[in-house]
Image 1 (tube, rainbow, N blue to C red):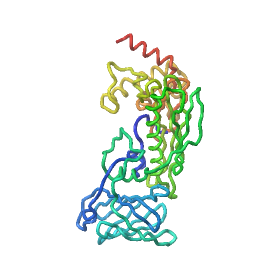
Image 2 (cartoon, rainbow, N blue to C red):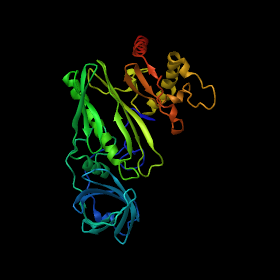
Image 3 (cartoon, rainbow, N blue to C red):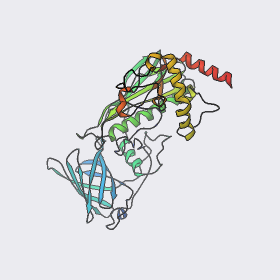
Image 4 (cartoon, rainbow, N blue to C red):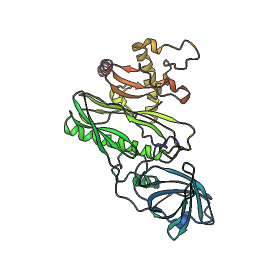
Length: 394
């Protein structure tokens, strides 16, 4: 099981929109089609986005042209599910096939437009007419903090996908005296909670937009990952019931998927934890910090060095004291889950639950049975004692 604690994960399968799990929802492009289809252009060019119709159905299409090779994806606005394309161009005509549906698409340039036909696997033919996509208004899924450029075809394509999607309350739940509402997006069937009562209004106003952005990101992941049957390749994607306390709002999200074109299925556990007094999103170093001075910024060389050479060895020592039997070296070579090795903990994610600080071990696929051991919990009393000890050492 993969644990992704703080990174956006949208494209692990290599399919545009699922990781590079980093297809965000962004702003604008408009391409000069004459350049894209120039017969003697041999270098790779940027992808282009088009909107239009297949018969009476409305679609959004994205194309990538590299010399004579063409690839892309499109979705029907009714379903928003990606359909990957692959093919070639010759004499100004594009011949594309959707392996997951068996449909074929023939396109040619007509001024700035693309026109042609789509023939289904059953042999039914529909006319196609497409225009270069115009920039769209900001969608509800446009969110701060993305590491994608603000302008680009992936962002424009995804903005069309997320445009006008509806999030509706499905149910309400009371946890620890606090009320949450579960919102559902019907096309993807992804659900996510929002805070409704039990915290000060400014705190909920700070946390809920972050929960909505996370929810929409998972909607996008589901719709951009297509399985070999043409439907979504996401087998599971859901939030566990959150942990709600006076100090923390914390939840984990579990997902598994197998996108068309990927080498193998994959899965992850991701999490978010917020300060219930301010609404600020917390990082692990806000809770547990073994270093000196202020923690370095995440993903920097200093942070990676800290994780490998300070954090991981200290966690091994702490876990060995708290859970000696589980941390003992394996009795036989066949047991590969050796939690006494610091590198098992270097990339650990985290969340907070009733038992305290939960560390989520992440290993490579051959060791995935070692992921997320149930014992890896540090009681909050121990965490608080470590904080007090560190304060005295300053």
